[in-house]
Image (cartoon, rainbow, N blue to C red; front, side):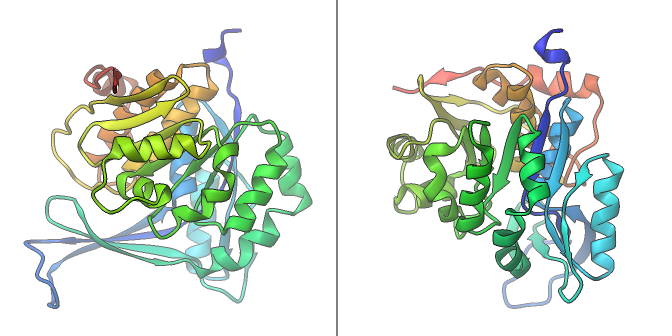
Length: 317
């Protein structure tokens, strides 16, 4: 059987929670009431990435945490709807984590608010459960993210042993939690600010310099996004950029980075090379920013059309 016909299994650990997005009707006015609309759906970095991976030929399971409220029921239904094995723990005396984003009229993020203390409290113990260790042992790769504390990420990486481990940076405030496992990661997906923070560089520092520093810290492969600008990536062969296919319009940037991570991981697991897998991830990201949902819905024809417009790797000196 061809590697592209196999459905490998991805174990994901991290956020699966409620995403709320407030979109402004006009220009943002600080320290004032801004008219707009509020939408709500189930999201979270790990769950978004896993759903994207499943759409591209990967089976999955997820470990997350939720409370004993109505929001928890919505998260559980969303996981069941995509036929992903749910290994999540429920804390009846807690509220389900949530992320609230304020989006401007052009679809760009103004600010985000994360209510996610349950992840800090619960993940260190939950990753050590025997059924989690068993699920990791039965997987072909592991995906984690910086919503879990450093101790939990380290324990999960230890469970993974020789399996490839992929990670998502989540935010500049949290990406440092992955510092202790950099040399064990197969690839880290991050945005420019997260990369600079992890590399110990100042705001505005050159992204290529951040890539060089992270390679020097032992990170084998990294992906650094910069909004609509070319993506910067590196592997043992060097540093390169890939130009995205410009979105026809921007409905909402939420979930674009998770789409890159999930689809890239899926195609790496199915046998594609790093750069080509990244091109697939970038095509999914373009379709995501054009959609109103955090995980876009598209058919094969739309995906192939988006993929055809993504650039090819350009090596950096």
